[in-house]
Image (cartoon, rainbow, N blue to C red; front, side, top):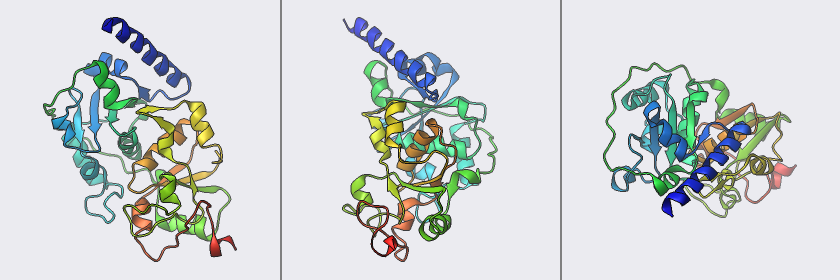
Length: 304
């Protein structure tokens, strides 16, 4: 019975994989695909609680990614500004990553953490045809496949990173100028956080609550069911109010949910998507920058 169920489940996963490919989402792979291609890929695991790499276990061969230490600027405030070239290059060398590797990334957090790794590889010029996201993450893998608690040993590489792509990030100054001050018609500011943080009802990771004036709220995690991506049609409905021809500036608190929004928007064909380097952890702690409470992009004096 277990064998029959596994066979049926595998067929379902293959069907989802084929659907993703047909919809231009061939960066999504499932656990069956990974199991068949383990010898030809490098696997990166990034967990919300990093100690679980060893205590709970990971996919055999997976390299541990420490989400704050490895994916943010260790010397900046806020911590999760984009890591500088020299720092991220050193990290990739420790992982043994080369530019021609096929890389599969997974997490246990609805792919939001894995999306940050995906974005950084894009930011530093990787061929994104060779970078994959494990749909379903560790949960899907562990249904039928084994995990291990033994750390993966890597052979350091000598990779030399490209310069970061300036078209993929934006600083607070551009947001203040283009959205808050000039309200440029061809720029949309997107807040990817939960709605109660957008409205200011919940304050986390910052002194100030609310959102940047002009920001619209689309919760990127709403595009995930369990640990799996929703269909392209469902994502398109989520982002229906975001003009496809606009430059889209995206932010969250610390770089993960906005990276997920980045991947979702790019999968839908949005061409110009840029992440706010520092996000709400910067804006919401700056004290003097303007903040809006409530459910609308503008209120109070900003309505005038």
